[in-house]
Image 1 (spheres, one colour):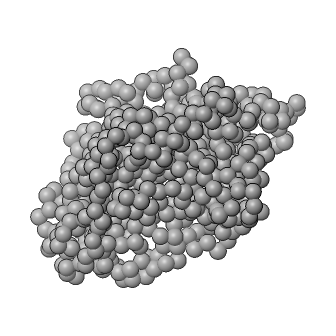
Image 2 (tube, one colour):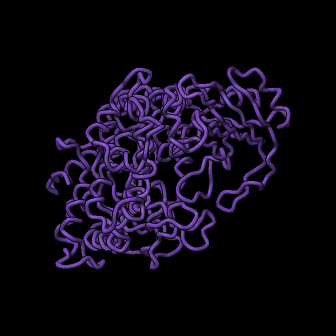
Image 3 (cartoon, rainbow, N blue to C red):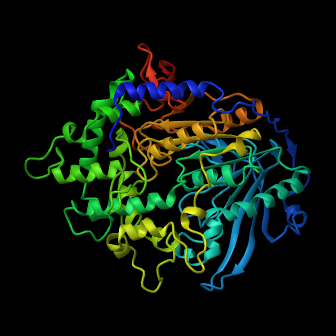
Length: 580
């Protein structure tokens, strides 16, 4: 781990940042107040939209249909009647790989519209037009469509989950940022033709790669969007993928069986050993927030207090699940402190120790899909099965040859220094580097969004093992310094993994407070989040500890505040905690 500041220094620095968070955060001029959206109703029947939308530039409408009330539900609540419109933009045949590409999309338009538009950023490497419902936080109890937004979803310019689209230079750029530029005016014109007016307010929301899309929109397309909601933003996605491959090399050195698939790599630190580490983190850090409740709220104090070398038993003999070997500890120390090049240069960010490291289970059932989506998925399965293809075919310049590309061999044998350099490189047809087309330009300089009255809210699970909460914290500190934080909020979600799951209260709605901030000037403070135990209508989180109440609540605090126990009251209720 990087050298930690002494506690007093850290507390002083955080106190200073907290003072900034309650002031006008770096901006000296008052921010403009944007007006509230006004509702409207569809001006015609859904089946008339195809003709109404004829002539949209570079666009083909393939379907316009009515979706009856109750056909969809979120959190057990029926979604009202709406129109579903599907189509594609900029269809073309690639001169590079001969494949046909288009930007596929879906829009869902409520009959009773609230006057707002939400662009839904999707995860992974896109490639699928997911239902345009605008899901929010863990197993959502609500969503943008349910709240009356017109919602857009897209495949970002390619079809299918394979990374082979990276051979086509334009498909890379569409995936990175250009699909959003093409979709946005089309979506707003569609709304105008459907309702007789364009959206009064426009929002962008997504988690993971969707959070990256949201960050890109905040910088590149700040004139088009009033509110940005970014979850676990992989705004340094090429770095994170490369770092995960470097971590796989380290895990390979302590795996107990030959590394030829994700199950074997998972023997580097088994489920039982991961749970041991997580339990020791909780034992050391749980009470630092004043409550022994299985959640590590004071993240900074935990990193200063927990010592991997001392606080987890070291095996004196064979590994048996009650200890970690010296070699395992060495590997974990390198992974958590941030993997590096051969020159010792950190590729991505460090990761904090947290109670969610033991979540999820390794293994592949007969169907071939990994079990769970926690640490075991991202560090063992994803590195060899997802990150290899992304780094080799999408982020590398030039991409690897499809004729000879072997993801497993590439993941475990390609020189990390070369991979690290490749994401910054350009060559021939590939005239824009991955760290250009995948990332928001100057991500901490968001003056254009701020100065027009726009707002951004970001949340991130502390136990996320693919995109580090530390990287997002660094971004927020940079925004506070470069732009001011009177338009930005950052929320850590203790225990939560990547976008959801983990021993966490991972069910929450940040869209409503974002709208209230943008349109009413009501700056958000703490946001109440719920656990998803038995009977939760948004879906049950299998990572919840047995001793938790099924409906436990906690306040999510704006950084750098921490949820601390008041000293009295139920440990299952958010009202027993305050952000300070």
